[in-house]
Every structure is written in C-alpha cells, then in structure tokens.
Image 1 (cartoon, rainbow, N blue to C red):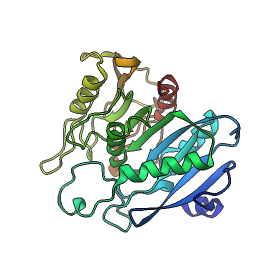
Image 2 (cartoon, rainbow, N blue to C red):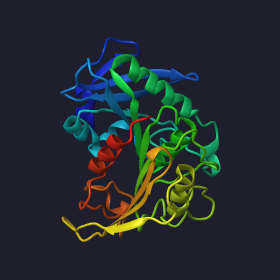
Image 3 (cartoon, rainbow, N blue to C red):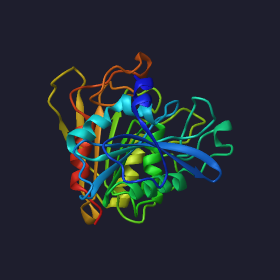
Length: 298
C-alpha cells in the first residue's frame, strides 16, 4: 500500500506552480537538514477559493505516508474538501522518526531539529502552492505527533486555529499560547504507551488530566466538565465526552475518553495488536473536522 502511494505521487520542488488534486511530495531544507512533506489536495478543490489546511503529525517510528494510511485522513479531506499535509520528523534516524515535542530522556534529546521552525516553513510552502485560508489552519497528530500539536499550539498560536491531539499529551514545561487555542483530545484509558494517568519514571510528558487542566486554564473554560456517555454503535468500548465548554473568545476544550481503548485512532481498526483496542463507536476524523469548522481563527 505504502509503495503504491509513493509511486502514484508527484514529486515537486518548492516554489512550483499551484498544485492540482492528488498527492504531492515537497522538499525543504531547514537548518541544513533536507526534509520533505506530502500535500494532499482533494479532487473538488477550487483554486479560486481559500481552503482549510490540516497538519497531520505522525507518531514515533512512522512517517507522513504511514500516518496517511493509519488515519485515513486523505479520504476525509476528499469528503469535506480540505487540504491535509503530512510532514516528516527526524529523531534518532532510520525508521525511528520523532518530533521535538518537548522533554524526552536519554539520547533522544541530542541534536534535535527545530521542528517548530520546520513546521512554520511547511506552512509557508503550502501557502505558496495552494490557495489556503490562513484563518483555518489546524493541527492533529498521533502520540509523539499529538505532543507536537500541543507545542505548535503553544508556540505558533498565531498560525494554528485549533488542535486535535490523539493519544499524546503535553511534553513541554510551560503551555503558554499567545491566544486561546481550542482543543479536542482523544485518549484511551488503557493506552500502554502514553498512559492516561501519567508516564513511567524517566519520561516527562504529562498525564491526560494534567494536560486538559492546562488547556482549560489558558482558555478560561470551566474546570468541571459536562460528561456524556455516547451511544454504543459498533463495539463494546464505552466513550465518554467531557466538555469543558467555551472560554475566552469561544475557545473550547473537549476530551473524548475511550474506556479500554489503546494507543489507537478512534474510527480506524487494523492497528498492531500490541497498541490495544480501537473503537468504531466514534470517528476522530469526523469529530475533529466538525470541531475545526466551529473554530476558525478570529
């Protein structure tokens, strides 16, 4: 599947003509590191109409194209007519690609790339070849990519309208966006890799409750959420929606907790067994897009 997608994709140098529908590989050099990202343009894209952009940040030991397959976000982009961008991390090398999302122990902190700068350049490149709506630029991510979502929300809040992290929490010491950034977060409470109630000793990313509390404080939302158990439709995994309501400027903080859910993407199955169970009772793609539509940059 991955090889077929690559073969069918178009390799285009930065600064090329406006992109048409399809998958386009783009190349950038940032701080002397040559990196690439993929831009997926939906079939119904109107070059005359500014279009929303979603950054999709892969997890560790993945790359952009693997993220595309794992999440099926390109299909959602085709359905809802938005641009989806799959950047590529660096990390320790080989297949072990990561994002510089915050505080990691041991050798992973050595010579980390400036990924905030890189993602800013990625957005610059996308804007140069696609008619984008700068008030509707969003970010989602899985695991380490979700952690990077929080970092870009904190350090690039002037460009990121809202975020939708999946199975990843805050990994930076201080969460201080210049403006309230709406957040919709998805997490399984049986996640063995990014544990719901906090990491094992030696890791410095936060628990889910601590992460949500930080967002609630910054956005000025209600500390106590309204909790609703969603209908069970496709499987036995219970999903609880915890809504902290609207805060400053209407910025929301919403948490979806998948009971017995693992390190997976809600709505998608087929992940390796060791990652745990994935629910089909909700679709992270559909929920985040509906959330994004409510939260353009003001």
